[in-house]
Length: 267
Image (cartoon, rainbow, N blue to C red; front, side, top):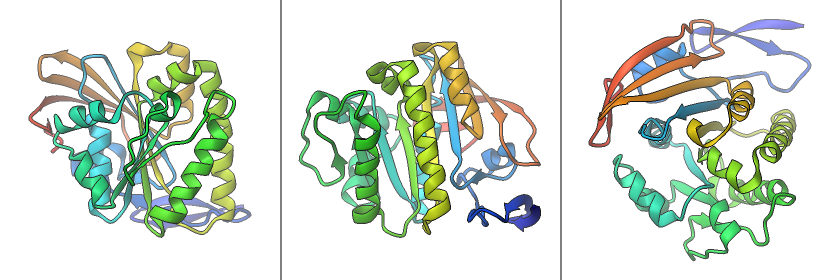
């Protein structure tokens, strides 16, 4: 039987026969975006940020994670696409100091790219696994994540950003990745029912130009929030807030100016 429960000024359903009784609504740290989403991000939700080749909209995911870290959460970058040195250069361009957050103990990198290509950074905030392939990816990733929870995250809330999901689709194959995503969602559901800890926030960055429409559609199915960016000119982007599970949500479109580490008028 479903009973209404009021949390953070909106109505959610409390499922009595499950142990999922409290759902917290979290701010992105960007008021205009919170309003566009209908109030913010639900814990344990997936936010899909879709963009094109020339868009800098992916920076929004990093900004949300940075804002949540300032509230005491723990940042987790799942790197699927590039060497960390290249990622650090990209992030510096939007004002995100990757090395500083890593060295301060506020952020770790689960480096699946380095795991596939046997790169050892020998840094305490960069984690890899050995001998990973399509068949072993999920169990090895989950074991690494659980180790991170115990040894690094503790009682903080993990805020994970997948950089990028199209990169992981290239490494594993689209159909394989959809099956892995489904299995991972099942693992998340079991953890939600059995574990007493702060539930995570999950953000997926996806360049739609590098994957099929079918793949985008599958990932969209499993995402509670969808934000899409289209580059419409030099330094100009259109942002579409397309999906949210919150009752106050209405789809919206914004024209934004991007540059100097800012996304206006969201900042």
